[in-house]
Length: 498
Image (cartoon, rainbow, N blue to C red):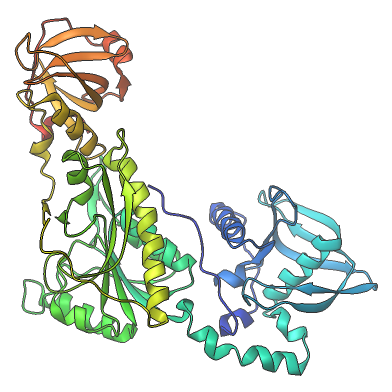
């Protein structure tokens, strides 16, 4: 569930492009991670070079790949051009920060560059041809210079006349983002990569997590801090609620952001009407279902548990109700027979990020139309309770198999054997008549443990003992004494292994 590592590229005439980069003080993990993000961003944008200045990181770092196969990346840290050939050639150049503009620029045919690599080792590079041109182009960025400044005054004037058009594009739309888990961080990453300005992020307060129960920032907060975005973590947004001081501070921050719209994805707090009214375009919600089916907190879990064969993402104009707002964009996604909540979550997160960018781009052009939700087919996806994950062997095998997938990775389907909790991470249902009591083991084999249910047989294929690792059934049986005729019984989910 790792969010994409793409960075927003500054676009001309953004004044930040004229910032002179400072030297990199240490080639450490931060620089190595930034280099990889820049390469990912460059490849995604179909470029051949990218300077840190273009992604609003003003340090002397550039990445390049001029190979036809796009598999020969080069990272230059603190580069210095020691020599440039007096022979020059005028060739057409473009720039990821000046999309759609190409013109001739005169460059030296060859250069010699001294720079550090990702190990911190200083190297000298002799470059000619396209590599020499690319190095000179990116070095200009580090000095705060954009390639259009080489052009004639007439051509620069023509490009500047595009400024009004450029500023109408999505990357000059200001957004507030409200979200908390991984699902939301994927959307935030996609918005940033698309160039939207996000001056403020709202997310849930830090929560205790892990074995040490240390306070941990949400995935959305972690991503926001990486991009130097202001973060607000109110406990409530109700001005007349339990935490009015939090709500008042949030109101001040939201109004100060002067956002065109707010994007909301799995935030976890109810938005009162005053929040919905502040942004010019209102609040857009990324909901992981085909509304009005599965309104509420756990649409992915409930869709799998119910045996739905398809789901999707709805971009919704939020109102005061629970997921009752008008639909702006909808896209369907099949649910595969082996999908877990984890795997379906990842696909829906990517779809949601793409769809909200599309919705905002259409909104920027004034072409977004709203559609009322149907009055029929309304269902509610109630929040998952850990107790639900206890396998009830008196239920049909098909339902239990769906619940195993629905509760993977959280909270994990649970059962017990002789009082010892066991989690079941994978299982399948097979036909079979009731020849034993529900929960009784019918057969053991490398392909699974067959357990009687009220209707059919559930074959357990991946299990986990308390304090142990997830194991395939064959490996589990080698370390766990289990016989045909033994009975699995109910186990409170909260006592199962984490």
